[in-house]
Length: 168
Length: 168
Image (spheres, rainbow over the protein chains, first blue to last red):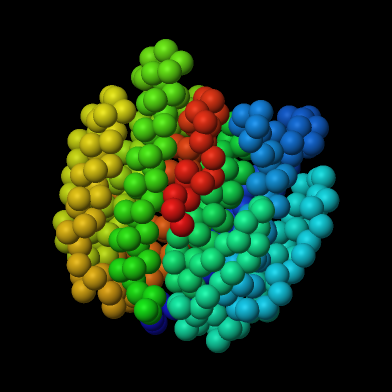
């Protein structure tokens, strides 16, 4: 067993997206039990100019599929950001995981020095494979999954760090 | 440049603890500018039974030093959890980074199959080096740093994802 670029992203992303899926199931159950309109949770945010739960989940999905596709040098799959229910957010996560599962280790391994360039949010982004993975892709995914968790925790959903970490 | 166990934790942890330090500086400046008692932010939490900012920072420190020490097979440095001000939280982060900087690549590299066992929160924990790093140590650190960020964001501190990601 030797650490590799593939192992440090694809299985990690799948694992954490599965944990996010379980957290969202608890949120959906909580909404049902407390007779809370699910859209209240889905549109909840921690501050007026911060993104709501739905966007945190969509961006977690985007962060996972985009970074893996860029490292694999294939086209980033494009998903419409049109989810409005917990079921639809679950589908979004499931199709993200399904994409990640198509990636083979040989598409990512050895990409430590890959030049990655793309245009996003009005500017050119330029990265090198290894720092892109460690300083951008991983923190970015965890940022959005933790923020989704924090929004739900703030709304009273009974989740703890063990839900975030899953079966680690 | 080849990915390694050391590269995937020590510099990543130092980088993200530095980003946390910058976020806390912005929080301290915000408290001063708005004439908010700093302890209000330091003791703020997102839900009554969730840990406050001070504990998020202390646990981020603990998560970093403990996981690196365990991978390096040295004693985990013990810090008192007695911080009550932003300056003291900065000192806590600085001494955590100072410890991480003493770790040499050869102490961590090749530890993919290391058996890690310790007793925590009333139970035995058993891990193997690589999954410990990828599924426990990294997510755990990002969880607490993002939660610290979310608490401050919820309290109006003007920070964005670029502060969390730093100069990635």
